[in-house]
Length: 214
Image 1 (tube, rainbow, N blue to C red):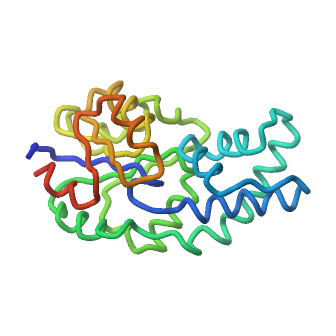
Image 2: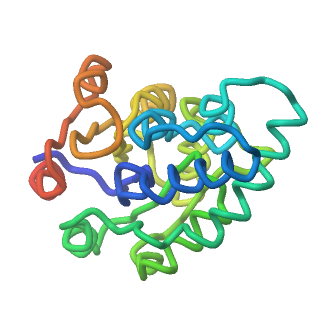
């Protein structure tokens, strides 16, 4: 086991399984715009880089007017449906309780408005000392800014922290910030691709997180 004093969690694909609600809302947006809907699995592959990137990749267009209209429509749908099927990954509650004496944070490319509503709706907010989501002035992962802000706010040195996530963005952001990285194989991201980035640790299952750190 490896000593850490701060666990930083990604949100989608790490703490929560939210892909169905996200993909459904993308297709609801397409329906409103009279665009062809896409298979859910295709949309799942676009999750993790922020909402704007999700819409850009899903639509496959860079038309500014279409992107802005799509973002507006998507937000309306997602605010109504973000907790329809989204859940904490099975076993995650036990992990958070297991690490109750450690500092914990959420660092996600998801907008803070959505993130806060989900964390409160799932009764998970009390487990965390800090939640950071995308804001206009914040650089998204793989940029290290949000991790560095977290370290500063919680007064933890990089050597005592680990970034836990299911995407390359999480590994690269951790590396740039000087913190340890832990990939997870149960999330939305491709586990083989994640392993290729050589994170410091790898959790095949949610339960593995309890065995990796103390």
